[in-house]
Image (cartoon, one colour):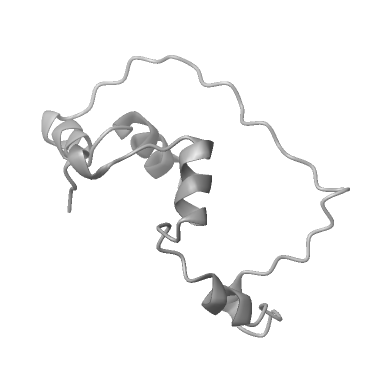
Length: 95
């Protein structure tokens, strides 16, 4: 499912503030205000209890360039999935 680029619009902060002040932002703030905060009982709420002061972010390893011969139909299949086919091939090999 693809959307036409004509539907994508950009607004400045000032334009967004003016739209909100005029009531044109299409956000139901009253509904959002009355919606209960997630309590963690529903796994779909995705409430993490990570202590962000001690979380360590692992940097990905540097990638190494390599020449690899693959069947043409395999390459075509990965390319047909869209941009990033080499990353997907890497993920398949890693798994």
